[in-house]
Image (cartoon, rainbow, N blue to C red; front, side, top):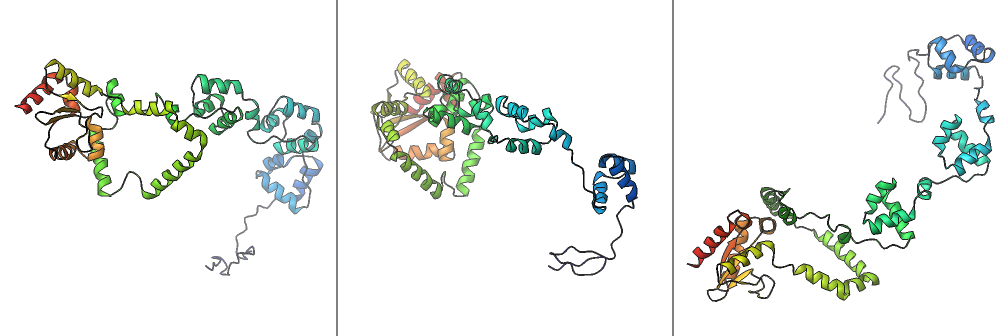
Length: 365
């Protein structure tokens, strides 16, 4: 795009500075002899001259340039700098260049120049922080006190990456994410047991699920699934990881985690059945499968099933509690079973025993 000067109407060239003949004079008319007299004879600084003439210091420097007068340098301070003192501050006292500028009253460029002249090797950025780190303290915080790398970084005022580097130097194996978050994770069920209200309401979960279904979005896209698969394969190639995953101890732990049965809700129904002699057997531990699904309680003679559930997961997976009851009920109906559904509101109510007992007895009638 061609640009034209508004004042003279000439074409503007990008590569050349445009000197407009119609440009209004902005240059302040100053007495150059006075400036020369102040600067050379009276040895005043540009700042002092600027104050006398009521202009900026840059204006005085520009006039000195026009007069071809060389600017004075503040060499007095620089000449008086003791190299031994600089070495002591930088090497022994581990002072930074910014701290040294305040102590010596010179610029950081002057200090850097003196360090180079003295053949002193400059520290890299962040090297000082690494020198002062106590490895025993890091080891104690990470292993004994079970602090995370982020938490240790905050305590020692360094980055998380620095802590990981130090752990690698000490040949300390990093904790797995699941192990690191042990006792810190949040689940709706855990919060419910503590007596806290869930942070996410059922209505929010329902809305999110509906939106996802409208947009036909999966939890993971094909690209994401591919990435997860590649990372899993890469991990499996690691011999230490493979040995750990296939070890007897780890497999037992996994099975134990999967078989945390009966749940607190199921325990209540077990007590109810035992107390009131209801003909239901607990099967939620996987002992009976109907098709490929495992019911919570079965009354085999009359072919009746009891399903106890937490609303959160059913809304998340099925969109709503009603939809879950419909799908689950229809599935068991194919095998000739009728289903009694007991939700979390009924199990957690103050008079839960009365509510659940009436529901089961009325269904069996």
